[in-house]
Length: 294
Image (tube, rainbow, N blue to C red; front, side):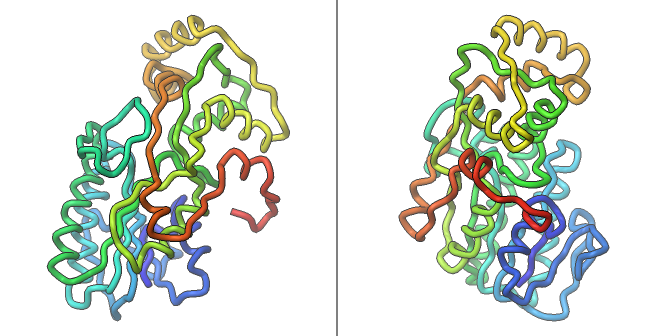
């Protein structure tokens, strides 16, 4: 099998999940079997693969289309002479273009507004046609926020804030968010690859932002998180807008991520495979981590 993005956050979990297989890795890191920048190059393969798991991606606006969309096209050009039997693409719930709401399932229209979501949606459409024309079994999985070692984005900002003491609970904040752990995303790839289809993957529990933050705090030595009024949070966010998104602990955008409910329904995948994901908050509180643990 081939795993792209194998040295990235999710890629490390995928390599661990498939450690019993004959794996070829592809990515930018020199530790990969094949070092290739898919955004500009077509990879060369000396053999074919039964399964390709395409996890390479980039969430940054300026890189998203080149890496996620055109990188997928270049990967398939490299596989053209000997297509795999199965192909799993790691997409994202951002293809739906939702910022708030509950229980969105796979029937929801694809209306992305972020560059990342648009690039993933275009890659999905390309793969549907490419795999159909070549008889390749295609599985597309759409995870929400992924929890795990070296996670990025909103969750990384939350963890950093808790660790450094500038993350706060907001009084009367009842927002919930869909999440899933990277170990479960990796395991579902193994189970779904022979079946195919398009599926959301979540932990099914959709924890409150409060419970998720408390679970992270527990993992960091049970750190205390203080609570502030919502009006104070909104005032801080307005000040943060002036400073800028990347340089401020909180902005209006970051505040909406923490105070708006956004959940996705993942019942469909549980109907086709025997898959019971970990409840993320329970995993964070009970998993026995060691130096070799992901």
